[in-house]
Structure formats: structure tokens, C-alpha cells
Length: 251
Image (tube, rainbow, N blue to C red; front, side):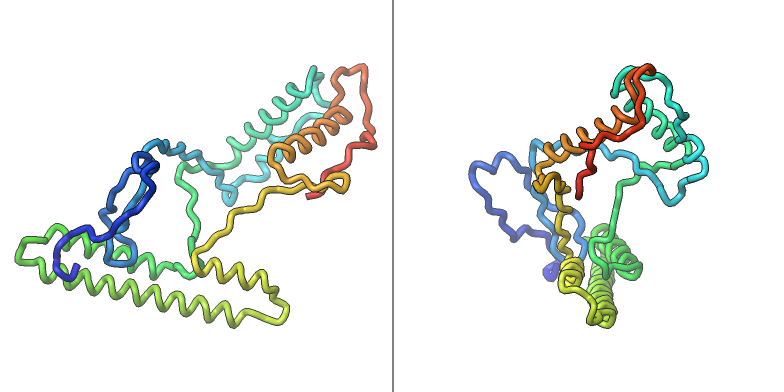
């Protein structure tokens, strides 16, 4: 940017076996610095469709409760699959009626220090960049470049102040009862590091089960036992007692 020219000075090194599996490209915008990011995208990547999200904060819970009530005693069902279908159909019908949905992707703050001032400064920098890109080679090129550099400096200063204020506010909230793990989680969030969510672990008969398939099977067996005792397969054979071996798994 100092020479007012566009050139690629960065190199991307990879194994020869991976060379044909990725596509090399340069983004036409840059979020924070004055360097264009390099994007390595796999050639065989197929983006997944964006499923709609439930807006639970706008849910009509009174309507959902009235529509999701299953009549007691339940209708005569023949198998567990029929009971599962009846349950899911009732819940989904109530959800589609009482809970609004949106097709927008789920977005969350990557770092806790990002605020509206940072977003506004980023928009100003992108607008200044677009103005400079369209005015290159014209008499207004120099003024557009100066405006872009000022917007870039304003974004860096805004981000730095936001980081400082966020860190000072968090440090002042630490007390003697704050655990070390909570402090490190906050530090990782400030650095933009988000550890993946741990897989569910079940504690059954003094045995820890962490494999996803085994966890799903154990949960399926537990709910299957509850279904047999609470919803008999035929009306002639009914019981209301919970089997003694149907013990809820500890998570």
C-alpha cells in the first residue's frame, strides 16, 4: 500500500500430495491490517446448507404448552416407533406454531472486546477502501488513499482501546473466589481461542463411557426401558411401575 500498487509477496508452502487438493486465492478485502489475506480452500469442499434457527427468545410458551400436551392415557400404539413418531409429531407441530424461525446463520462474538465502535470503524475502513479502489488512476487517488489510511489508523486505535478497556474491566472483577480455570477461559476468549465443546460422558455402573456411539446406545436403551414401562405395547398388558434396572445415566 505504501507504493500504491498491488502485489503478492507471501508464499504458501504445502506438501506436494496436498497441492491438488486446495485452491489458492487472495481475498479482495482485509479486516484489520493492510495486507490481503490468502485463502486456501479445499477443492472437494461442499458447503452444507444453512438450517433455519429457532428464535427461542420470541417463543409463545403458553401456545407451545397447550399444543404439545399429549392426551393421557395415550392412544393404543403398536410399537416404540409409533410412540416416537407420535411424540415427535406433537412437539414439532407445537414448535412450528409457537416458535418463530430465521434462516440467518448463527453468529456469535469471536472475542469479548468487540463492540459497536469496532464494527462502525470497520465499516468506515471498508468504505474508504472501496472509494480508493475505484479512484485509482484518477486525480482523486491521493485524497482517497489518505482517507483510507486515516480509517485504518482509526480502526487500529479503536480495537486497541477496546481491548484495553475489556481487560481492565475483567481484571477489576476478579476476586479471591474466582477460580484459576475461569481466569484462563477468559484469557483464551480475549485471545480469540475457543476450545471445542467436550463430548458427553456417561457414568454407568462405575464405568465411564465417552465414545459417541456408545453414549447414544446407552441413552437409547435407557429411554427404551422407560417407554416399555410407561407406554405398553398393547392395551391388555399395562403396568405403571418403573423397572428396577432402569437407572438414569449420570453425566
